[in-house]
Image (cartoon, rainbow, N blue to C red; front, side):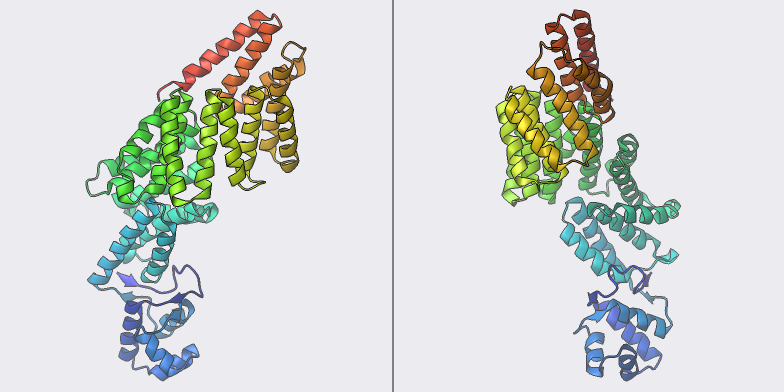
Length: 447
């Protein structure tokens, strides 16, 4: 194994204080009979400062270490067995920090271990684990393009990976696919990670639960609630809290609750999402609190409890940043509740307000047109609404289905069926109900 400075550093001017690096460079300096004055002059510092650095009493710049490594003519400094064991322990800690959503701790560990790693065949096991965890961190911070580049480089090392490496490799690959909204492929990749973790006794159970949670999330996004529930139940039955996995425990309960709501199990859904809300409030995470209120609003929309739906969407709106997509969806869902409650004037006012905020947002335009047509038909259900009807049938519903908004498509067909009944177009009403039944079967299908 080798101890290399500069190759994988997180920030080129970062202040470092790593005893093993300092001590081993001091030993090499002495072997090469180079004085402290020579090294101090090379770095542009005084001898006292150099003495303090070599004895780990002072910090140094990563760039200084790069200069020393070059001048001393070494590619790396051999690690002792104890140092290898320490780095392995720290990277295992890093994996758990990432799995628990503790990104502050993960970043600190990444920075601590960066100087200790060098991409050489002899370093492969340790380096691969570090690099795979680094990609995990990049994805958690939204650095998707950089993560993709790292994964492309790592794919060349796939044949050298053992189960630990491959678990992290599949996990990262699945997350990248999800980021690209390719949930079907992402699910298949996460299943590979889940299989590795579930069948390996040496793996912490955290990794099994994390993979199951991601599979469940993928099925949820594709609107297969029964399949989502199967995997999310596995995730929530894992003892997340004792493993420090509160963030993922929150996430799994929230998504699980949403899927129970989709199949009509409202009480079960309420219980799970209120559990997520309680956790959010206990840690004071404003985004978690807002998203929990949003999900409660969706539950009450599904059950047509319009007043409760409005209440929770409004709470979400007050917490989400104005102008964000979260604020947009909270606003449009609140307007949907107003339409359901026949508060047409209030719905119109809210839609006008949101339209001005998201004038260039294509998603906002699509949802607004859908809401306007739903509003128009609901408000004047016995009047001629052919233009709105054709828009809903030919544009809105295909768009909803393409984006996996199955329940919204069902609601649209039901409203159209009601419209056709009231305008004495019973054959067309029957066609709408047939579509509703097809989608309900699709929603309740097992994978």
